[in-house]
Structures are given as C-alpha cells and as structure tokens.
Length: 327
Image (spheres, rainbow, N blue to C red):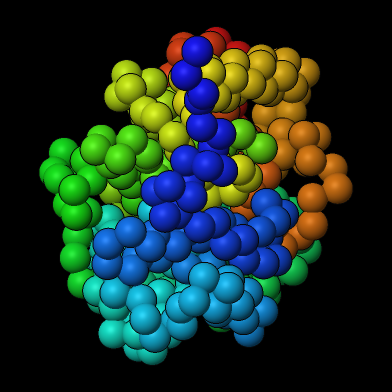
C-alpha cells in the first residue's frame, strides 16, 4: 500500500510554514503562513504590537528570511488580528498586498471609516438592550482596539469567482463581510482564514451597514457560505486559528450541527423571556469581559435572526430596543 504523507510532511513539501502570533483576543494566537515556494508570500499579518511583530520576525528568521524579504501579503479577511500589521509590513518590505475589495476600501477610507465604525458599535449596544452603565465601560475601550491597526493599503483586489495568483477566489461572507476563500487546485491546498475552524465555532460578527442600508444578517450569510464551501471539494486547509486539517467536509458538518444546537438553546431562552440580544448573551456567556461584549452580542443576535429567518421567531422594537418572541 502507498504511504500517505502526513499533514506536516505535505506542508513541508509545499513550502508552507505556520507562524503563530499572539493576540489579546479570547480566540488566542492567530496563524500566519509563510509560503516559500515562489515569490515569498505571507498570509495574514497579526495585530499591531511589538510582541506580534517580534514573533513574526523570529519565525521568519528561523526559515532564513527577514521581514524585508516579503514580496506578497495576502489578507483573508478584514479583522484586526489578521490584517493589523499590514501597513508596517508593506512599508518595511515593499511587498504588494491582496485582499477583498471591502478591505481595500477600508484602507482608503482611513480615519473617517474608523469614526463611522465607532458610532455604529456604540449605538448598537443601546439597540440590543445593554444597560447604560455597561455601555459606558464598553464604549471607552474602543480606542484601545483601534490601536491594533495601523494605516494600510491593499494594492490588489481579490474578487469573487476570479483566479488571482493561481488561486480560485470565493467570497464567503459570514464571520466577516470580507471573508475570502483561496483554493490552489494545482498544489491541492486552500487558505480558509476564519471561515472554517476546528478548534472553535467561528463567530459571525456584527456588521456595520453601508450607506444607511439595513444591517445584514451575519449568521444567515455564514450558514449559506458554509454550505457553498461544502460543495467546492476543498483539500488541505490552512485556518486562521488551530492546526491545518484535511477533512473540511466533516469539519463543516460539525460546525453546522453545533450552530443548530446553539439555535435550539437560544430558542428556549427566548421562550422563557430572555428576549433581547443582551439578555440572551448574558445567559450564554455570564463571565464574558465587558471589552468583549460585542462577541457575545454577535452570537446572540445572529442566532435570533437565523431563527427569525426560519419562521420560528419574530422581531419587534420596544422603546428603541430590539426584542424577539416565538411565532
């Protein structure tokens, strides 16, 4: 019988090196990947911090490279733990960068976009029923997170259903609106970012509506994206957190099953009177720190909206606060 190569052996053959970088988010370290075969490429960058930069530089030195040697940087999605160091790394290396059009627009918008995002995340706390005293503490921490990202530019867009740098490109909105799946059919690996993870259930984060539009339902989109990914015949996957894996179909099925189970839990909470996103979030995550309150709210409202999409819940607004009730 032929000997099947292990995942570490396949990564070595492909010239792919995983470099974990520290973050101060509950999810823990973030994976960035150094692709050595061909133009020296970095997938994702980590947050902007001295610790993150030194971990990246150390990981590259172990492979015989310096940050200045980078030729390309690919961003999987527009969250700070994945693209925070993009600006400084491009400045030091002169590398070209590739990312979703929304990330490219975010870099161009700069300060104005940052202010608009802060306004949204401040306002959403009131809409979701967060008590006033907690709102004040949570809002005061926004500037701290803003410092994790330096100004940046994305020089090339990764557009849905195109082929860029020999990768098939697919938009997979859900965890973020800019989640991008890159498939290298020739070398049989896929860059999945936080779209598919084995260690945790990816959190479809709250999205700021663009130009006054209705806020999109992140979990509803995420479930649709997972089902789309299930049909793409993925192979060896490089995730943003946790180890690489080669059974994406099984992983996707487990995520969908866990999401369904959590929806059932939340439906029961709503039926018992926990009828605002904050009340559900507080019941699900009683020990969640205030600075991470948006993570819990994203999960709660995402499932409530998904249940509404299924026709099991309906939403209404009372005194400016979003409520849900069983149909």
